[in-house]
Length: 177
Image (cartoon, rainbow, N blue to C red; front, side, top):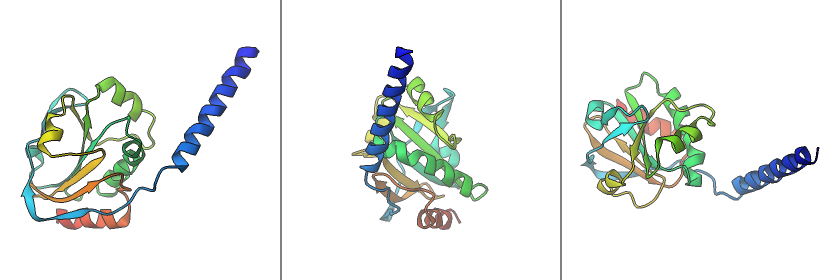
């Protein structure tokens, strides 16, 4: 009986702490910085969550959202469901979403994504040694790039985004056409 009450108390305190922490976070934004002129996207060759080899060149002809993130990064965690919502909103529109987890292992990421709603179904890659992060000149997490169908980086965003916001969806869909 004592352990049940103690467990309940621990869960209640953690729940209050997590909810208070979320309220203290700044809102996710919906702006992108346009890169003029657009720059050729750096190399992006990594293994995915299924340990299959992936090369961004396989997506040539599509607009690609490339998001660098980590599970320990609060805005990264908060924006992940909106990336999946973006994927759902843009199905069939020549758009792909690729996330690059920086410095973590598959087990850590897998346990995190299983708790998300909706569960992400986009490509998830692993940059365990931060070499790709360096090639893309990522200075902080999360950082997102939008690559046009010709393989050029057209937009960049540093910090958390609400990817299913109409402004973002419109820019990406327009770029894909």
